[in-house]
Length: 184
Image 1 (cartoon, rainbow, N blue to C red):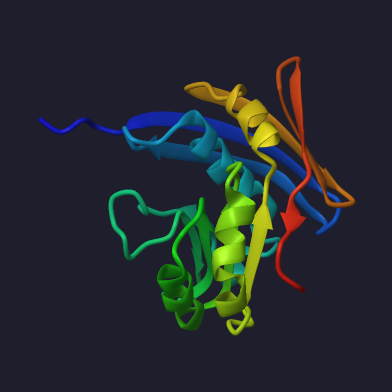
Image 2 (tube, rainbow, N blue to C red; image 1 turned 180 degrees about the vertical axis):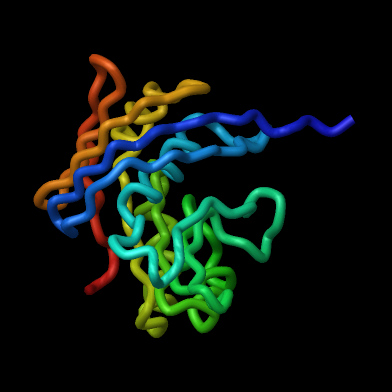
């Protein structure tokens, strides 16, 4: 018998001063049995950093990447079903990234492992030809601290200012500084 996903709920109170995006967002996260708290929380962080200011161009949603290899971790689709923003978490191979690039207006990859520099060095020269791809790194220590905030029901306060993200849950808080790996 296959293991079922564990449902997590997160209420995000977002204050993104860098993009002038504010609001409360309710997320229902189906956590695949093979997914760690760390990866799940990076998906939540990716949501907070990329939620559109104006939903008229489609909402950002969690996709089924661990169940369906043709889907990203998160995506924003416009009202016609076209992919506006494809977001992958982890270290996808170059074929996946280059396959996503023509399918979406924007592609974002967020890596959070100690091995990110090695992974990035191996594909950087081939990815730069895709102009709509942004690759970000979250330091492993920061992503592990973020994982410590994971609970089945979370009330998260997310503040973004000057490229720094503060994520708080109750009396605990984590500072995350995403680093862009490819040129803007």
